[in-house]
Length: 272
Image (cartoon, rainbow, N blue to C red):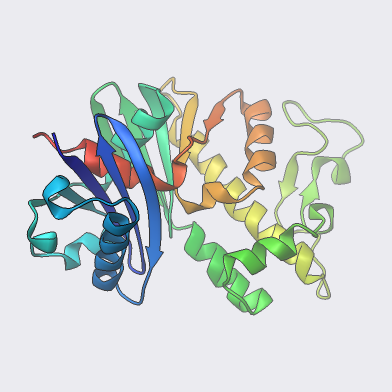
């Protein structure tokens, strides 16, 4: 049996993985000026780096918003498109080992996909995500470079940006500890350091996504959330989501290949 290639095509970034005998092979990410260039660049690099010949590839599975630009066989290989939300669910389920969860796909915006066994369905979304983070950073910090934003945020102090319960009450409120956020950006001053602003932007985006995810699961009995997408790489996830877990008695999971779950799910959707 040949290798199955799963490709998640974004507008400027493409993620690609191979799946051989249900094992993930060397995922990579490539950025380019447009989705077609990005896809072919990623595919060529992937084959080269892993010493895979075209004859070794059994199937190419394509998904993502940029997949609509791909209307031909990739390098003449058998090529199919698959629904992005199904790919999100399949990849997150495979990587997390959970059969019942809400998949939180944190891309340019955010989508919520409910998984219960083999039933996978898109239940909503949020216009806040990595695009929001980069847009606010452009306006407020004069940069959209994730590495530069993160470098600034590491030196920031969130206590100078967000209003916490401890700032407005001498005692914890029911279900809310003193360090819980009362209001995002409420303490920010006009001359706030860039470091504090960078951290505030990241925390605001991550916390808003987490809170919306919890609300999306109301009346479902689901308490597990699988976070996937590029935003899972921000180290602030390790602070924001454990706090939400304590407050709401839920669990956030970030799989090993969280960044590549949609591409993995695309490969898994092949029914050959």
